[in-house]
Image 1 (spheres, rainbow, N blue to C red):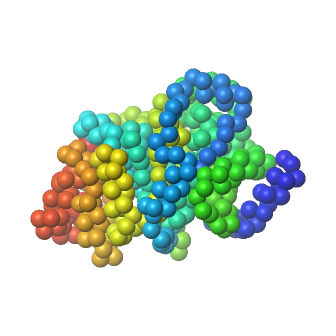
Image 2: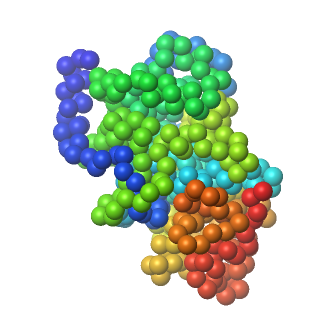
Image 3: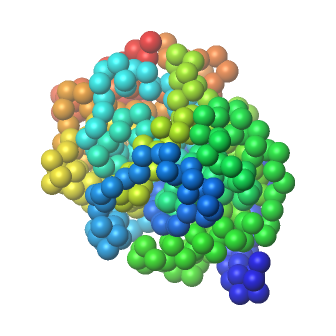
Length: 407
């Protein structure tokens, strides 16, 4: 590592402080108010990576120009807000359980809207939208998605993506890993020791390309992206969802759990389950078609603006992943603003809301033993019809109305 690289790395990490929370603890949170997002850009790293990329379909046309990408983020976004979680990874181990039902119902294409860090990528790989919008009230979510975008552009293959995400050097022959199972990928990452020098090398590349994207970022925000990367690198696949000011809740998954999780039918189905699923998301990232947005789902601008942008492209919403954000909107007395925003979105009779229920005492037919969360599907048109016909009696009424069976 050159003196210049080391100096730049130390400058960023000193700004960030690196006085991080422990990354191996569970959280008592039921989930985020909205979720994490972003976008960046990076060049491929090795000749082996080039060999691998020649075997994988590459995007040939950009949906949004680089110069327009930052402007689109700015135009769709609202001022950021606060939620008391770092939310670096999902706390919904059941996140894949809806994928079989979405496939059976022909939910595909159009525009995807979602919250959260990278669990939305698995929905994107299944739905294959033309545009995807990731919205979160926390600006930190935007910063994390800028990091994700940089990783995608740097890594032609899944093994290179995960190796760089966790600061572990990739194997010398990444092309040989294109048929690997998620368990094999996880084993490779687990077996590689944390390498601070490699982390600094990767950060130097990512920092350059995030800056080149043109999204206005302060020095503290650039440092925050470095902090996010450092948390992944230090914790490895044992990374868990963390919250502030609340004690741990057992049962939340590690990144390893999310990587190897299955859908309701027992099939591995994350965006990292196969090379084809990964390439689906990567090509959208390369085309600048995954757009992170800062905004409140019940706010006056961001969600409505997303709908207008999708409509201007001739797209209807195929799937809208809300996690359990609605729980907080009901609690805070602003659910009606959210429902009105949903009603403004372009939709059809196959447009679906994907939501999460965190199980405490209640269970539903979709609930699975051993899972602290349950994934639910509701037709968007059914949601709007119910809202306009008098609304919902409460959160439980909302999550049990117009259920779609998952099997």
